[in-house]
Image (cartoon, rainbow, N blue to C red; front, side):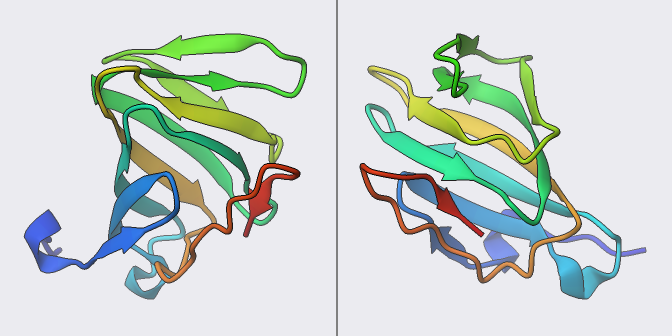
Length: 124
């Protein structure tokens, strides 16, 4: 057993916000956990080709849009699940950051960073 605090891990800038990777592949759990902040007013076109991801909102607001154009509001207590390596557009709230607990399977290394562009989905 072990414990770890956000203060114990570096803050990673991923393009549309920040991520503190609390649990990564080196911890040998088979999944990873991150504290993710999506900046207010940001829009990020994302896809995880090598990982499945679930994100649980703990504060703030925002939205996620699928490739069919369906927009899902995200508020505290909402989880969104990318169970098919889904490309998606993640947006922070208009006036507030969206704060998520993100879980990845298999685990990320913790060094990954997105390369955001307007013409495609950033992936790793």
